[in-house]
Amino acid sequence: MAVLFAKLGVPKNVRLFFEPFYQLLPDGSLLFPFGEEAEHFSLSFHQVPSTVIPWNAGNGPHVFISHSAMECIAFLSCYSHAYPVFGQLQFIAIGNYFNGLQVSSSKVALLFGRDILGRLTDIKVSTSLRNRGAPIFYCGEELFDISGQTFNASELSLNAFETLLGVRSGIRTIKPRGFNTFLEQLKHQNL
Figure 1 (cartoon, rainbow, N blue to C red):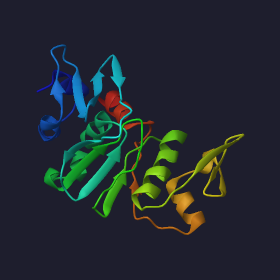
Figure 2: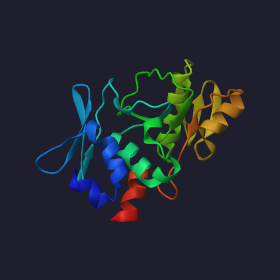
Figure 3: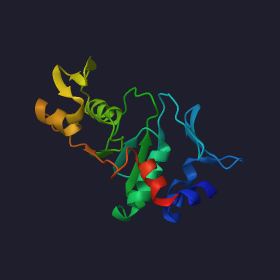
Figure 4: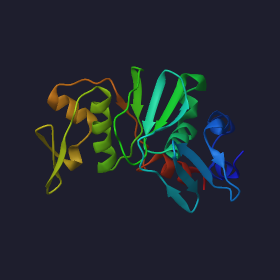
């Protein structure tokens, strides 16, 4: 098992769940395969690929989608108490490039950051999963045009978008408490 996970405070049951889905390199860093590309993580760097092939872990009906495998691991590390049966879970990391994704489950949660990019990604991924397009344009002065509607960056969320357009995707967003990402939250809890 990766010493790096122990340093980060990843619980043993979470380490065991994700063990088949990464490679431990001789220098102690971790490699997560995205097809021919890979996410590479150590305490001193984190490289997330731009690829069309997502990383997958698990095959349960509860699907969690994020940009990186480490974000998925950090999320489950912080909230494993809420999911006692790991066999019910599936994690998908899409990397830095989103080219559409097909998910058959109706129980989907998005694990993108609290910042504006994370909230815009929530909207883009959610509409794509429900076979709808949502063109996003930056209008300047922290205003965004999404599907012909104008949103202020400070008020933008998937819920605000769906409420204004009268859409209900059934897709949840889960945000870390007090931090921009779950990986930041995990590091501050345990390092």
